[in-house]
Length: 326
Image (cartoon, rainbow, N blue to C red):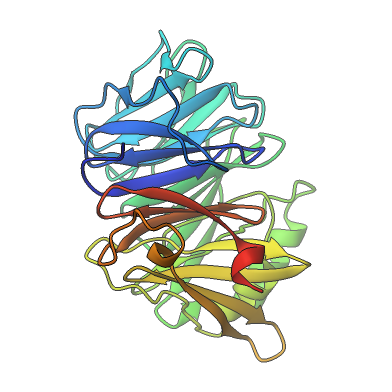
């Protein structure tokens, strides 16, 4: 069993046991990472259009998904059913990014309607000071800081904005020029000194023209940020629906995972020369034989040394970085 159309999004559970995938067939599917067997109660159905974003809560009890039907839906993993407070309605465009707070109390969503919305998970109600407005383009990614005090959002308007959860007001703005991150040294210092809370940007993976496609507030990959400050772009795929790239860490090294056609490309960022060096490539269909040879990688996700890969033909597979880096 697989998705009937292309896989639009992937997420790994915190412990790495499960992968959730969302597809253009309007459903979510849950897969066991080691065996790639599908959960017996999968798929999860309810969205009326493509599922374009999905995430597990930190404790693994819930999945949140965003769709081109403009809704956020919440699913209970214990029952593999939609939660009673779902769906969360209010966006007027695709919900292209979703994330839980660390305590699972809140859900933040970003949309093609240029807004960020914050929802109370247990009731499904919108925070009374939401939506958060200011972006001038599609929002591709959102995240909470580990302590839950901050929200970070990345947009096609070439900015990253940081919002206070207490006041629901914009706290700071980081702008990206056409050549790379403008005033990168200043940005890096202000990220470190502006608050005792380290809401560092982790995955700064630009779409073509340096739009932000993925941000995380957990910590900052300084070498990656330095690369962008020097105008280095690691996007190699040229699909009609560009993917975010992803990162894994293995033996204290940082690796950048991207794709071209059906091939995973693995680069190691060299902080001395400030360049990404190709260290491995892998045609996924040679490892997972059920993947058609002409399939194209549509989306990728990672956690620790695990890499999840989704294809335009509906397949979902998992790989471990150490096996590819031998």
